[in-house]
Length: 254
Image (cartoon, rainbow, N blue to C red; front, side, top):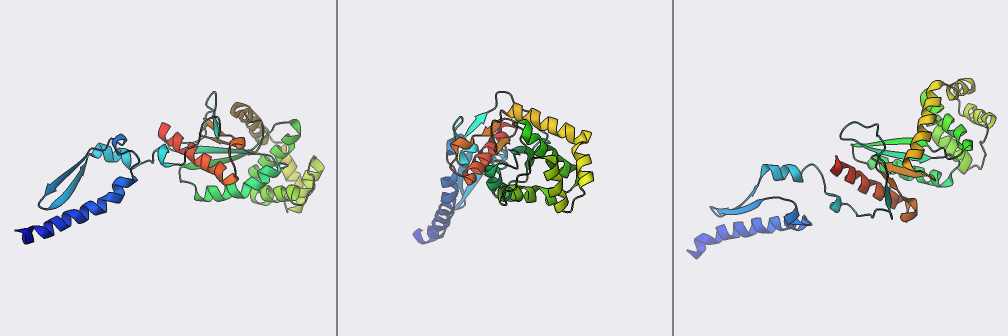
């Protein structure tokens, strides 16, 4: 009798051993709502999960599975949510910057790296911050390049010209000289800067800056509900960990 039961017992023990890592991965098994019933049938261990519980577990990670950050230390919740421009199921991340800001320049490669590895539902929107009248020139230039489809020729080169080469592009003449040095038609660029389309985009950026409560750049907002607090993070990489944390909160709230 003992010899006949040994293979069955061995199989049951092997299956149970294989299940241990899965059970250990659940931070709070009782909180998942999964109704797991283990039944021994013909020497096999069978797990039954209700379909409704599987639907809860499969689509999303809980916020607790992501590194935790604290409200009012690492991020702020906006007093009034700002309408987003994303479709259902997408998470909007807005970056506000200024070309003359060295911190924005240093953030840029980290932003690009993060965006390349971000989840497919992330929609990144980069827009100029306009915290004083002098910044409006660069805002108009950013949107003029966007309207003309020459952002690749304009955006990074202007960042580098100002922050690496130390050139001050603070007036329209200096800006047009820079634009032409990049092989962009200066007259067309100036026309685009003064167009109704660019004027509307600049006005929208100013409005959003006020709604987001932005008082400095770079600034990162997530889902129209949260703003990352730069004073609460130790590095640019941690800043994007906060973004990921907030993006997960938005997914759970949708």
